Length: 131
Image 1 (cartoon, rainbow, N blue to C red):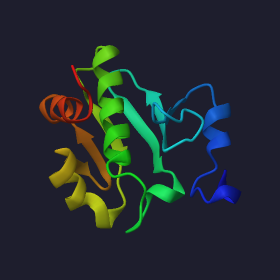
Image 2: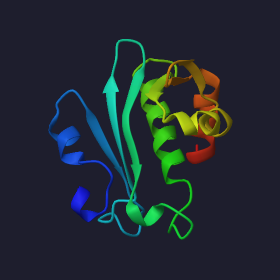
Image 3: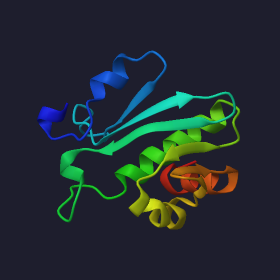
Image 4: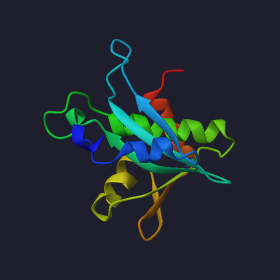
């Protein structure tokens, strides 16, 4: 919740039946949430509604690296599981568009909408998930 240092009120997405909310935890401590992901299943792709690292995983002194990348890779994995060939769309903050192009292999569709197509989606899955 926002009062605990999160930027978004995740209860809103959690209570919305049109959204699927996932949490990232670590094996040794499944009760501590490292990051959260909210997805909407569209007709031909997965829409990442929200992605957020836990407050202690942000900034120079973050506890874990790669939380956001892991969550995005999971969205890509869900897209393959749903038969969408890994396609994931999201709206980027303007200042992060080039960063997402470089780190996620995302393409800008117009405005702030970006998409991760099949091959970059598979690359992210291969990076964050062991076969």
